[in-house]
Image 1 (cartoon, one colour):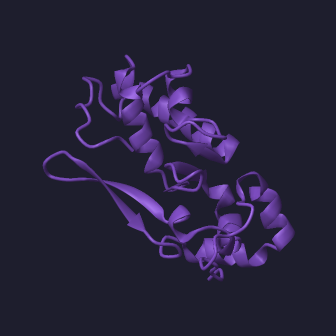
Image 2: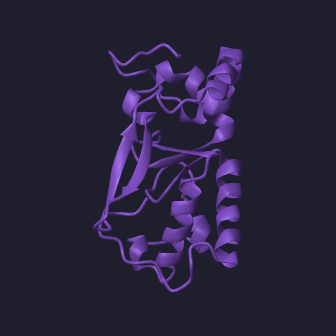
Image 3: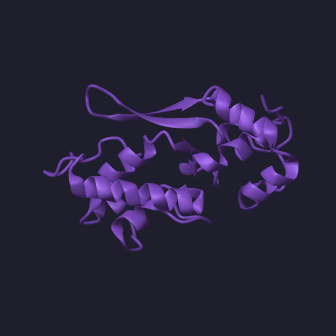
Length: 176
């Protein structure tokens, strides 16, 4: 989830045992909170702060642990249990799999660009380009079935803190 032109990884491998533990802690943080921002400030916790073990002030690329933070962000964001989208205030947001059925069930309450999957693609030149997978193309059959099995009250209870007050005009969609 880093910006284009990010610095190279540090000497430690992104798959070293210490990084594996950091990734596991990052994934546990995402699961516990359900919805977290990657680095933007907002109404939900930031993953970069959890990885760094402190609140980062200013640009996180200036932090002494920037390369380690980047490596953990990349691996956590790529987890099959994490959806990267722009759910919270249009900022890159990570949503844990346990909330996907509720998100799909209530998709008509969100602007489509908020629930499109964001993927960080690495170009041969080393740049990072954000690719968007529109909703519902990222939704698997099992998540779709689980969403259909939820009633509205269950789905609203799971996502109440992140539901917009009202869907923007002209953006209503039926869950698939």
